[in-house]
Length: 188
Image (cartoon, rainbow, N blue to C red):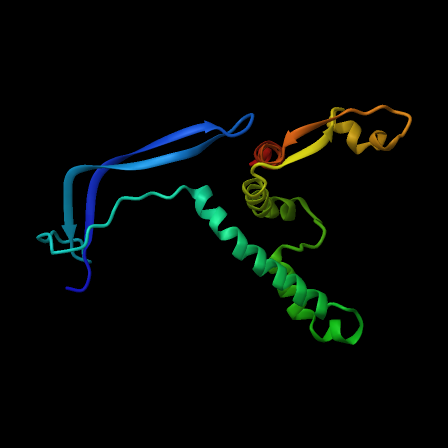
């Protein structure tokens, strides 16, 4: 026998804290193992417990796992951007490498403009994932934003020098999660 499964009966305890206006975030979790452990071969048949090393029931939080991956993701994205800049210079070279350029743009999420409701619906999950990834990255950062209603930011009144606009610091991570959870996924 080269492999076996150890099945431990128990339960998971998770501690959540307020992570923004609407969302609680898991900040701690542990697996509490019970006394029952079953052993099976690869086909699911019960077997006697073989000699084996103890493996702790350590549980990693998703956010911690993603945070550890971020530096590598940045390096990959930066490298792809650098290659894109060197390939997509216009003229004959860009035409020659058009398939490669398209593949790289797709890989880092440089989409073409949305033409239909179907395309918009298909893009939402990828945009949500990016916003949530950015929210993790933005932990501890703030953004200075106008206290005006958001609609006034977008109609250009914020740029009117005659209007006195106050700014306030906001938790950037919470803002990005709010945009993802309320603004982008509201139709899901």
